[in-house]
Image 1 (cartoon, helix red, strand yellow):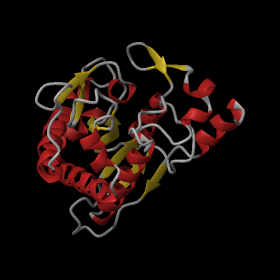
Image 2 (tube, rainbow, N blue to C red; image 1 turned 180 degrees about the horizontal axis):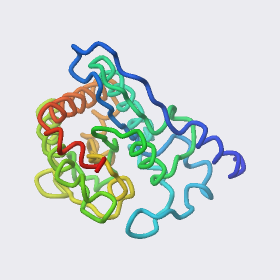
Image 3 (cartoon, rainbow, N blue to C red; image 1 turned 30 degrees about the vertical axis):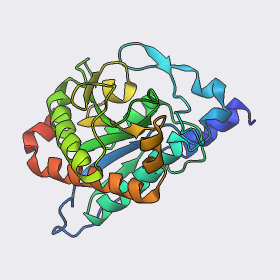
Image 4 (cartoon, rainbow, N blue to C red; image 1 turned 120 degrees about the vertical axis):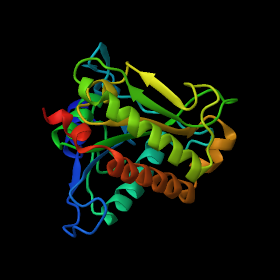
Length: 256
């Protein structure tokens, strides 16, 4: 195992990636900035000292990150998250958006969850999404959209985040066929105040748990590239729809 300082440096070096959107004004997302945070990272397990150090999440201290979950066969959440994020970024770029990713590869450590929020906030994203898959009870299945609760830094984007969350919920369920969670939240929505990515956001943002990796039926779909592309397509459609619907004043509140 590499030393903590070495891996931490590697994590920061691979932290953020940004690609400018098309200058073609006819594209639907031309001029828009979208933040994507693929949860965890593929080598978080290799540096527990770095990953377990405490950061401030807006309400309390929590660990920098975790390794994430995995299927019974060992397919990791970090890999799933990054694959979907990569497909989503490609979809959004074809629509003209500028995309900001919080990590460039699935072979690093970190960045910490507070740093991920900073990356997206500083980019001035019009909307952002944190991509995850859950490690719930084996008998439970389905997806959940996690929305922020007002805690200070995110106060101005609560309404916009919840609007986006509802758009995403409807589009994801329709496109992928994955049902809303049978064990988390209510009607596919869970409002959380314990996650740095939602507590610290100054842009409209939600987190999606795309399905339950510990459920055999969900896991069988999650590992397939075809499903990962489908999930990304659903997210891209939701983002485009939200940006088309949201009043400019609502998206601009974070700049006040």
